[in-house]
Image (cartoon, rainbow, N blue to C red; front, top):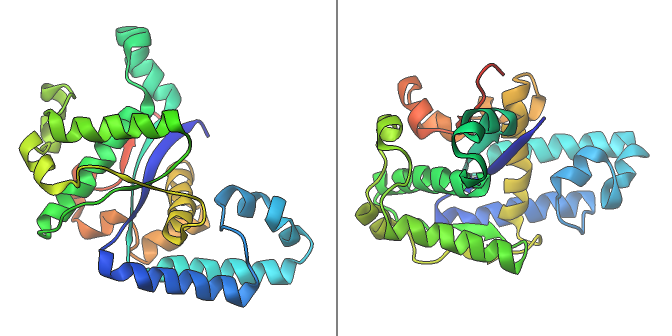
Length: 241
């Protein structure tokens, strides 16, 4: 797979304690004292190398993990970009001036989440896993741009998505995003679920993706079929894939 994605869990703040409790209960049951890191779990390496040596324990853990993720009171929202398609579509036209994928994805996923919050008369506070001073600064700049200027996408091609106005985004979005580290339970579950959403676009039979979809945990479940393309999980530049 050749992709870039930003996304996570869209949840109402009063459900956060329940999510933390479910995460703690799972880790306590299986003796997990490290973050639930998607790459390590899938690869059965590092702190999860025991999964390759203890198949019964690993099977029980994965079953409980799947059941827990499919039961959390939240929805998975994301923007996934297929890199080769992105370069083909915009490389010749914009060259080195084309936007970075993180700028594109942040705008899309933040705005879609803001629309859902606004539908429910809620404000939206965005949490982002901190990765470094430079990267965090870029996220702050993207976020500030959402509240300070109207959409920078081509109005002719983006009008079908009914972009929010600058004024509405400024009203719905908290002024600053908040950053967390890998110990954050909801952040760990975001990591796990977003990978499933990515993988599911390339392989719709991928079990974690199918389980999330069947459980109604994808944000697409909020909308009818005609709205999903414009308001649900965004898959960009997947032409011919």
